[in-house]
Length: 115
Image 1 (cartoon, one colour):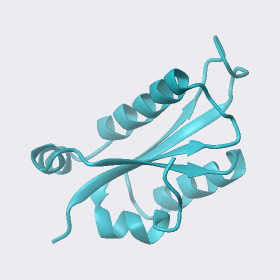
Image 2 (spheres, one colour):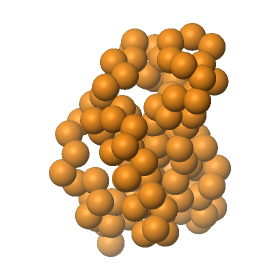
Image 3 (cartoon, one colour):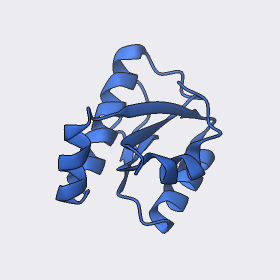
């Protein structure tokens, strides 16, 4: 059996400052975990909570991967920013997939580059 991991997709076109990017990635990660099956969370927690942050080019690509992951049955989250600091209200910044089977997630996101 393969390991479990979580993938967080972040929009490259927004060029977010490091702190803002970190906060958005954290929001996505936590929200997806809260939607995940408890047994998967426990297994993932026991093997180190592997997370990988990948980049997508823009909002259109972010939503495409989010919808495909949802259609494949993954626990997913899509983060829409409140717009209090860097981006306009309603800006979709990040999405998270899993935690789930690494090989299954890689079928969807394996061609994306690291952030």
